[in-house]
Image 1 (tube, rainbow, N blue to C red):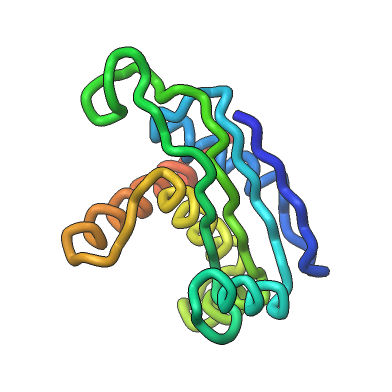
Image 2 (image 1 turned 30 degrees about the horizontal axis):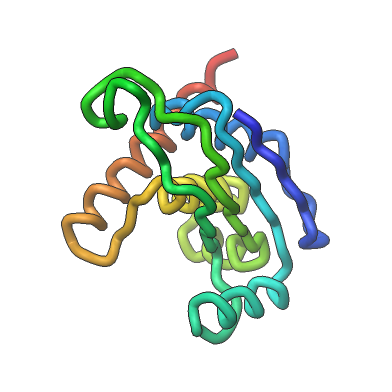
Length: 159
């Protein structure tokens, strides 16, 4: 996987941990090992501008996902019915705002690092076509997000 991180937020973020997390999520989701992903970390002003420009919503948000390519199933079919990884693709951009993440983390009673991991995973799932507009979609996406994060935290605990 090629995961590029650009931190333009002015906030110190463990960029290497986000790269490792992204690789973990993409690997578990069966995405081709040559797929490319960009993670952009921005401040509240930049996030507010993107949020308004692309979503028509005022103020900063926590995460935005901008898909680039449609994923193409591998020769054996889609991820759901085969072990063949999806073809390589430029997946797109996940944009994170650590200032918003810090506020949400405090409200949720966990660390900003954990909140950024959750948001990064959430954004990647959006790039892979998951959504949460309908109750069934919400249950599927958030269930998968929880499974991926639990597996990630288990991997991180191992020496």
